[in-house]
Amino acid sequence: MCGIVGYIGFNQASDFLLDGMAKLEYRGYDSAGIAVIGPENVIKIQKKVGRLANLEAIVKADPNEGTIGIGHTRWATHGVPSTVNSHPHQSNNGRFTLVHNGVIENYEELKSEYLSDVTFKSETDTEVIVQLVEYFSNKGLETEDAFTKAVSLLDGSYALGMLDSEDEDTIYVAKNKS
Ligand code: GLU
Image 1 (cartoon, rainbow, N blue to C red):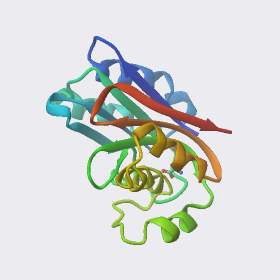
Image 2: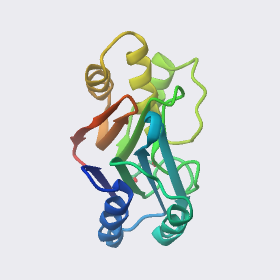
Image 3: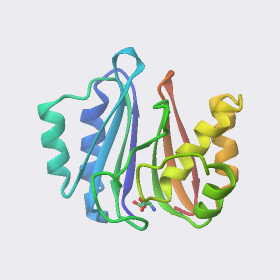
Image 4: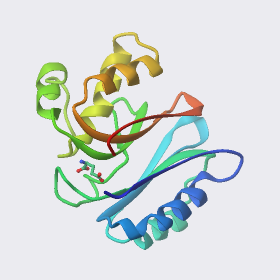
């Protein structure tokens, strides 16, 4: 099961993320992606199926500038290996962006209980988590509380990293089994 890297600091996050992901390549993966909070608090996501070198080429051609970010190498469990299904995944309002290693066993139940009105972009179990964070944020919870609430509903294995585009100082993390 693949890998996650996060960076907050004074340097370009993408350099650190890609270096860290290269160190995790030995674990195996089918796709890779990064998300960085850039100018005007817009989160830029770049992802690509196949080798990390494919992603590195994209980032080299179109630098992802910013000093906080998350990176992910995926080993698909739900949804085919594809660029759309690769991580990071983003909530529909663009505010929350998340990477996940592991398997969410109750994602279908969570979809039908909380997210029946949401249009999903991917086939992954993971996207449910980030859409749930948006759901609870829209109910008025602060981000940490929305994240904690969403995580409390998950059954299965997970290591998570999440960005909030409105907060350049925090990566939200949680883990269980993974
Ligand atoms: N279950 C998730 C997916 O299929 C995460 C897989 C992983 O651990 O990389 O996208």
